[in-house]
Image 1: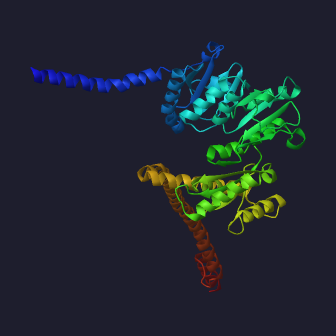
Image 2: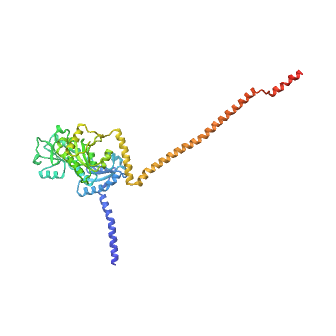
Length: 461
C-alpha cells in the first residue's frame, strides 16, 4: 500500500516537473504578442516595443529567449510598454512601412514616432532603452536630492538650466531625436551642485567624468552635433556596438587593444596611458578624439583585415575606414601625444580606406573568413556546403568537355570521309588524263591505223 502511494507520488512529481517548464513558457510567451497586419490600426495610443524577425535568421533565434525575458520584465515592472513580435517575411508590407531593412530589427513605436534600437541585445539594455524612450523627452529635476540620485545612476547627464527660450526649444527638438541614446533633464539653477558656475542662463550642461562642461554655440557648433559627441564618457570600453555608434560622432577613435585577462605590465601600461591622455588632455583632444580600450584583437583584426599583435594602440577613422598605427612602440604618455599630434598634422601614414582595392580585399577577406570559420566550427558541414557545389560544378565541366570531345570525334570521320570522297574523285580524273596523254604520245598505231595501212599496200601491189 505504501509502495503504491510512493509510486503515485513520484509519478505526480515527475509529471509536474515536466509540465512546469511548459506552463512557464506559455505564460512568458503570452507576454509577447504575435502581431499581424491589423497591428497598425489597433495599436492606437499604446506604446509598443516590437521585434521584427525572420524565421530563418540565426540572430533572431538567439534573441528569442531574451525577448521573452524583456516581455516578462516590462509586465512585472508595470511599464506602459507592450512587447510584441512580427514575422517580417509574412507581413512584409507592414515591415516595409516601418522601415525594416534587416533582421532582427527592434523598434519602439510611440504615437507617430518610431525609434530604432541599436544597442547590445541583452535584456538589461533593451529594457533600459524601452523605459527611457517611453517616458517624457525632458525629465524635470525638482530638488538637489533628485539631482544627486539621477547623477549616481547615469554616467552621462544632459541638463537644461533656465526658463522658456529658443535654446530650450532647440534642446527639446534634439532630445526627441537622440533620446534613443541618453537621458535629457531640466532643472533650475539652485538645484545644481555648488561647484557649478554659469556665466549666463539659459544654458545646457553635460555632467560626466566627475566634472561638467557647458555648451558654447560659437565653439561647439550645432547643438545636435555637440550632444552626439558628448554622450560618451571621455574613456570607454569599446566593442562592436559602441564603435558603430561612435561613427556618428565624427571623432577619431584611439583605442588600446589589450587582453583584459592579461595582467602583464605591457597591457596595463597601454591602457593607463590612454586613460591618462583622455583625462589630462581633454581640452586639447576631446573635439577630435574618443579614447578607450578593446578587449581582444579578433574584432579589430576583422575590421582592419590584418593580424595585430597585442597589446597595441590603434586610431580608427570610422567615417572612411582608415586607421593609423604608431611608427614606434608607445612607451609613455608623451609618445601617445606625439602620435596623436602627427595624425592631426597629417604626417602620420593612413592605412586602409574605402577605395575599390580595399573593397575587393574586403570581399576576399570576408569570403576566406567565412570558409575558415565554417570548417573550424563544423568540418562535416563545411565539406557538405562547399564540397557539394564544387562536385556539381566539376561534373558539369566534365560533361561539357566530354560532350565537346564526342562532337569532335563524330565530326572527324565525316570530314575524313568527305575528304576521301573528294580525293577519290580527283584521282579518277587524274588517272583518266594520263591515259589520254599516253595514247597521244604512244608510237604504237591504233586499230584504225592498222586497218588503214594495209589498204594502200594492196593497191601498190
